[in-house]
Image (cartoon, rainbow, N blue to C red; front, side):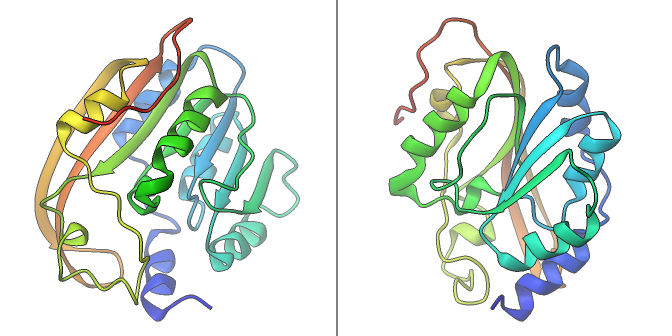
Length: 210
């Protein structure tokens, strides 16, 4: 059963606006309009992708997220939903992979395997749109309540992110630092690296450490 904080987060983000990175990523897709949404939450990105003609394979580890999305997209045969973790999801071939504010919670010891699965799922020339958690973020520090939210936090430096992106042509990589109120009402200091990148052709897909 999800915590009250997680439920508030889903409620606050169900109808959030679409990020510029995702709009850019969608505009760059040149191939079958098939997308994977990693950690789909309440389905805001699914809705945008469907409005742009994508068939969407989405997963989330939280049953509440999948329940919300089943209700929201009921009757839509182009939305496939599953309750899975990053490491248990079966990644189909896709021209777009979205992982916004979700890889933050991939267990560190599973990330290399997960990243290889994501890279292998992308068709050559496919687009990755995602974000990584920087070391100055509230969630990277001792004040983050792992009992209320998610216990695993993957923290990355810019050098680590650039190493992971070696199989890609980086379209944009932006570092964001700001403070404010997070969805659900908690105070948050953000430190995030947001990425839009195109998978190179004929390159081995392996995660490496910085």
